[in-house]
Amino acid sequence: MRNFFFLILLTAAFGIAIAPAQEKVAEGQYQMQAVAASGAPLTKPATRWTLYGKPSGGYRLESEIENQPAGIRVVQGEELTDNLTPTAIGYELYRGNQPGPTITANCDFSGGAVVCSGNSGKDRADISRPYKPGEPFWMWIEGLSSLDIAWLFGGAVNMAHLDKGKTEIAALIVSGGSGVMIGDAVNVAALEAIKKPLTVIAPDKPTPWGFRSAEELSFEFVASETMELNGTQVAVKHYASTDKKKPGSFWTTDAGLIVKLTLNGPSVVLVDYKQYKKLIPELQVEKTSSKVMENVPVLSSPH
Image (cartoon, rainbow, N blue to C red; front, side, top):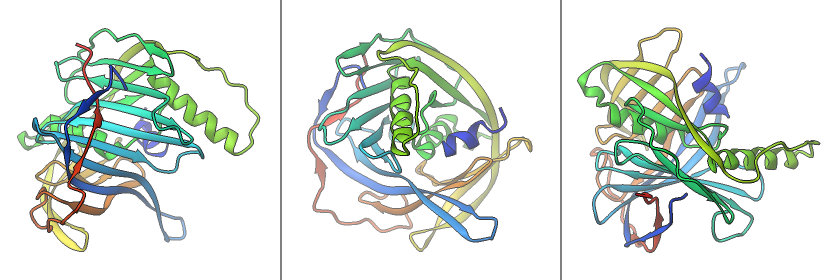
């Protein structure tokens, strides 16, 4: 499974609750960067995200995945603690101009175990049995390549407390449920867009959820460095894989925000970053007339 993370780079809900107004804290984009055989740089937008502060504390992330097939939108949502550690991760798939999502999947792990549910149209996925993964972990819904890998991996990093030294990070693979239907919908739309004949063999209703852990990577601290962001040098901590067969490095700020991530393939780099609250001390705080977001749907636990 050496190329597991490389393939990921290439390649809600329990009931919707309405949250109070939420303050916009930061926004930015993650961009895929690589080098062609000719030496020319290759760049491609990956995600566009916004981070909101919650009145109760912590944050709410909404990240829209770029480069989706026509008529398809996928949004990754996360509930985060003050140090950007996720307590819930979910996905919403939108079709055409429909105002609401047609498929949702959400996994909550605020109670120490992962519990997933969601829906596809009027069909609701059964709530999964609690699953206790080994920590730290980053979560991947099997078959779904429409994701924000930087926020997913960054959450695992913040969960790991890497300041304490070397640690292992596992991939928690979530299968079935309504999550698999989001990946299927994206893949079918992509094939239809290129007029490729296909016979679809996929569930038309949510199936039972499944969980397994795979591909542990061990990381250790390399050095405190600086990296350019928005034309300014910012302080970052550099960590690298201890396994030469599974190379990887990442650079993160003290606030827990991934600035660059490289896992055996193209790099994911933070660009066009703006902050409305001082998360990165070297960068200025922007003024915004759009201070709050009203009536934000949030990922809620079934318990």
